Structure formats: C-alpha cells, structure tokens
Image (tube, rainbow, N blue to C red; front, top):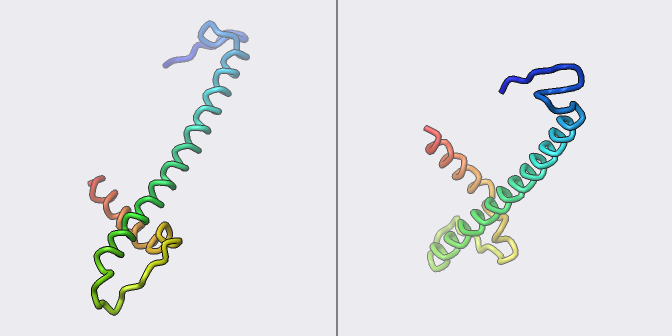
Length: 96
C-alpha cells in the first residue's frame, strides 16, 4: 500500500488517528505473540508428558539397564531435552 502524505494527513486521515491505529495494532500483536508463546510452551510440556507416558508404559516391565522410574511429579519435565531434539528434527523434516 502506498502512503500519501500531505501536511498532517496520511491517506486522507489525520496523523494522530494513524498513530492511534498503529498503537492499537502493536498492542494486539504483542498480546498475540504472548498468547502464542504460552501455547507453544504448553504444547512442549504436553509433548514431554506424552513421551514420558510412553517411556513408562513401554519399559515398566522390562529389565533394561537404562530405565529410570519417573516419579509422577516429573512427568512434565523429565526427558525434556530429548523431546526438544525430536521436535526440532520433526520440524526440520517438515520444512524440507
């Protein structure tokens, strides 16, 4: 969109109205960014919980030297690094 400036007007609108509109849009973008970051964080926690649930179910009755019994309070955090690596690999594959 091309903007035409003439005195205190931008595309037939007073400059102060344009500034108010811009301020409103910036505030909306900031709120949306915050909400998106919170949603992404919640999805990461859910992914870790799902991974740990599968880990627990798949290895609970096996005799595997590397198995760690995960306490229920750690289900959302234990293996977070491994899940982050898996998600990054998936995102990389989708982006190709």
